[in-house]
Amino acid sequence: MQPDLTKHFLELVRLTATDLPADVEKRLREARASEEEGSAAQGALDTVLRNVEMARENSTPICQDTGTPIFYVSYPLGWSIRALRSQIENAVVEATKRTYLRPNSVNSITGLNTKDNTGDEHYPTVHFEEVDGDTLTASLILKGGGCENVGAQYKLPNAELGAGRDLDGVRKAVLEAVYNAQGKGCAPGALGVAIGGDRGSSYAASKEALFRPLDDTNPDPVLAELEERITEQANQLDIGPMGFSGKTTVLGTKIKGLHRLPACYFVSVSYMCWAYRRRRMTFENGEATYH
Image 1: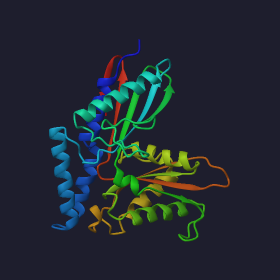
Image 2: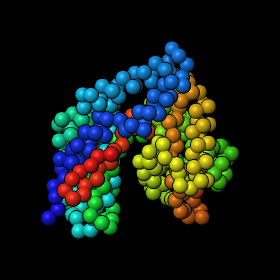
Image 3: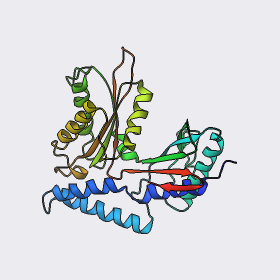
Image 4: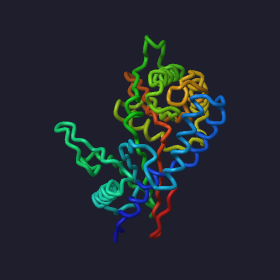
C-alpha cells in the first residue's frame, strides 16, 4: 500500500523555507570576506547572514517572499500521482498555517488570494517522473517573485547584443540579463541557464539547472568552462550585493543544453536570489532523509 508522505513533504517545505543549504551559505560567507571592509556590500551581506542564522534557529522564513513552491517528484512504478499531488497540496496548506510559507497564491482573473497557497493545477507546481527502483525523491525550490521578475529569454541571433548562434552569443545574452537585473533580483544570486529547446521547455530547464549544488562541476567540460567564465565576468560588472556595488553579483552559474529546432535558438535565464532555497527528500524503506 502506498504510504502517506504528507508529514515528510511538510518537513521538506519547512527545511526549504527556513534553512539555507550549506553550499549557498558558504558562498555567501566567502563573498562577505571578499568585499571591502565597511562597505555597503559587506554590510548587506552581514545582514543577509544574520537573517540566515535567525531563520534557521527559529524555523521562520528566510525571506518574507516565500516564493512559488516548485516540486520535482521521481516516484516508483505503481504509485498514484493523484495521491502524491494531494499529499503535497495538504503539506503546503499546513506549511502555510504554520507560517513556513506566506499565503501567496492569487487568482489572476479575480485578484482573490486563496490564503493557503493552493490554486489551479499549476499552484503549487509539481513535476512527476516515474523511475525504476523503490525510492521516491522529491526536490523543492521556492522561487521568489523578485528574482523571477528579472528572468529573461533571448532568441538568437540578436543583432543588438552582437550575439550569434553560438556559445559566445549565449554568454553575451546571459550577461545582458544580469546587467539588466542590477540589484532588483536581490543579488548576489545564482543563474540557471538553458540553451535550446522551445520557449516552454527552455524556461523549465533553466529552473531545473538551479537544483545543482553551487560547488559541483558540469560534466560537460565545454559548459563547465562557460559557467566559470559567465560567473567571473558577471562579478566584474560591479553591481554587487543588493546593487550596492561590489565584487559579488553572482554566486554561480549552472547551464543545461537542450536539443532544438533548426529555426530556433533560445537562451533562457532563471535568476535565483541570495535566498537560494532548494532541498531534496528521499523516501526508501519507510524512512525519509533530507538533503
